[in-house]
Length: 481
Image 1 (cartoon, rainbow, N blue to C red):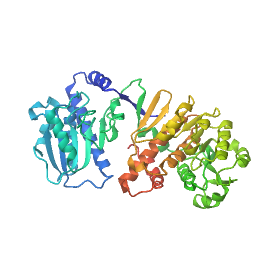
Image 2 (image 1 turned 90 degrees about the vertical axis):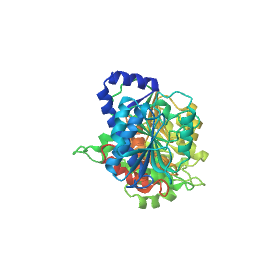
Image 3 (image 1 turned 135 degrees about the horizontal axis):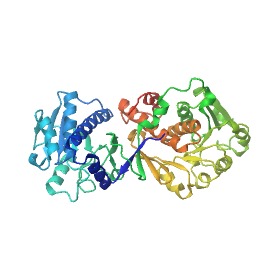
């Protein structure tokens, strides 16, 4: 089951909140408390991508008039509860008297341990919490506020966090966030704002129901994989994934896909690779069954090996094609023929993402293009295909619905991360061959959560793509992320 929440326009979000709270001030106060504490705890987790949060951190809160400022005040207070030596400084965008009632209430709780300032601390800040404007912001920015953001954007700050939306969104001189924490409802404009940084969705249990084209994926999509397996099961109960790929020019890609597939929970993996690679790969991953395939002169998969797949085809639950394949005409002709004849669902990746291949045959399929590959194949994508569009926000497209994953980040901006996603998704598809969309969404969420865990443990820079595989088990054992 895919667990995903609606992404609304600002107007739709406003209408929902007006109906949901209906003037209930205590209900709004409870939601503000929940939002603020969720922001604090999420910020502290994300801070680990650059190191441990300092016990004596200096935190700056930028406060406007409304509830975003209240959320930021409560977040700051929660941080002090966890780190009593933290210093909190507050800069009011419109003065303390402009605060709305609930925001004033939140400020009174923080004021005993915070300082209102008009000058910046020497040496900068460890964290800035932006709570100046919410979704009711209307352009243009007032000159004084624009000047404030310009000053803050120029400060030495380790992490810049925006509450719900980065203040001044869409305007020159807006606040530049490293992370934006969408509280309760993700606003659709966040998907395109260049100053939003990375988006985190904080579920406040609003239970929004809306028939909208965009949805945000929840880690709860993985919950069925976190449960006990049927006691009377064996390896045949969990599918058999076939993988075709590899070449002498790109040998590592298919190995990474196989290693990821082996961690997906699939029962069996058979990999068809150039015969010159099979022995070495078998030593590296003996759990898979490696079939050496005749090679072209340049080291790709040759047409003459088709009988190897045909002899085993009735054993497969799903087929992954493409990692490390190369673009030799003979190899691509082979792959087109395999896709045309396939009777099991497919994951088509990397160099197999060619217009004449992605539309061949009638088998269900998951496509995994990055932006350049998507531009190449967009016009040829058949109706009914599931498309995983990889990028800073990875999106799983199925018909008119887009499922967005906010998990992962710049740690994925390295060669090999897509091969791991392909292998993971292929293994999941082999377990639910009748539901390619579910397999695609699970693969994207699991892959992104592992990337977050990797970055929080080792940082974003000095890591390897294959380390993602080591974090797949731990992520699955957490109920929520």
